[in-house]
Image (cartoon, rainbow, N blue to C red; front, side, top):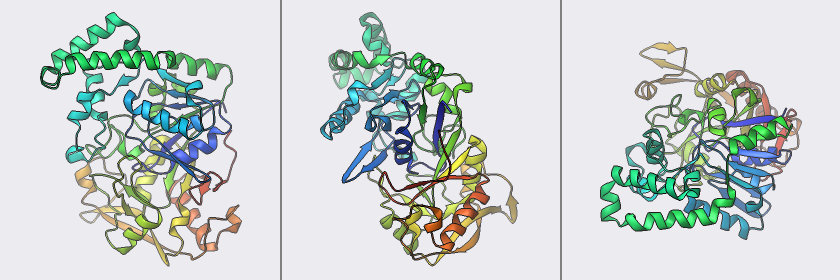
Amino acid sequence: MPSLGIIGAQWGDEGKGKITDYLAEEAEVVVRFQGGANAGHTVVIGQRTMKLHLLPCGVLRGVTSVLGEGMVIDLDALEQELAEVQNAGFHPLSTLRISNRAHLVLPHHKLLDAGGGKLGTTGRGIGPAYTDRAARIGLRAGDLLHESTLQERLATLRDAYPKHFQEIGWRDSLPDACRRWAEQFAALITDTGALVRQAYCAGQRILFEGGQGTLLDLSAGTYPFVTSSYTSAAGIAVGAGIPPQMVGPVYGVAKAYTTRVGQGPFPTELTNQVGERLRQVGREYGATTGRPRRCGWLDGVALRYACELNSFAGLIITKLDVLSGLPILHVATGYRLDRHRLDTFPTDAQVLGQVTVEYETLPGWEEDLSHSHSPQDFPPAARQYLDRLAQVAGVPLAAVSTGAERRQIIPLQSFW
């Protein structure tokens, strides 16, 4: 297949970075198509832990890495991230490309988003940047390359945010910052949609790397407790600048349990010792914010919804090893509301917060899975758990991850 997509099947933090890095070994182009520095993709390479927020994981494999037109990019954060990756011995500048249509995260966006608000966002200015984009007053990366266009766009922003420009002194400092960004990134800014389309037609292997997760999708997620971009498979074509026909099989990534960061309903959340154990053993702290993640049993209802919505070709289960040592496991297989069983995942966050969960109990296991090389190495209870997850999700398993390192992944099928 010339292209593959990787999408989070939960509320983000599923381990997409590791999976993308694994698949990028055989890819020629890796594309981030939505979101911005609110993403946090972690890849463990031996003794090094790389945390990427804007850069596609392809930079760690030396392949062409694209920041697509569906993204909102904080160029100061990108500059810092590039320095960190270079200091770790990688060479991202030779392969990185930035879409000239991608919008920029500017100082007023971060000011407006400070603290994350009642929705519990990362506070990185992502939502306000997408708001300006929709209002057609945003600044795009390509605008930096044309002085007359830049001046026109900055004038529009000054009219829209006079208080910020006058009181905080951005009338002079923001144009200066734009000129500095232009000098620094001009060689990387291009029509990445054309680049990806040409790569596809040339038969190159393209990997689309999603940020966040399906349940945070602006349209399909648990609104209003969502992000500001389209995180499902439907967002790939628009965010990458390609026709839908160029999107090949899409694979979902899900933890063997469920986590969530920030506000919003979480039916299977555990606020007891088991939840705390999952947090500590799974190191469930946000790669972007450092906030502790809320932890709970695997929500099979939400997972099945994500699989149906994205039409996943396969499901990749991560952090199965975290469950070792738990004598009993539970999987949510249904919701009830006012004694009625719900046949579909609720579209209303308030309804989701009121459901009663139906659980199925499965035996746990004690064995350490981190050194396993195939499912045959797993104890019977672990194999039974995986089989049941696939049944609940309605999608076959494509791979299982049993640890944080690159090598700790067991493919169950051929991807490329």
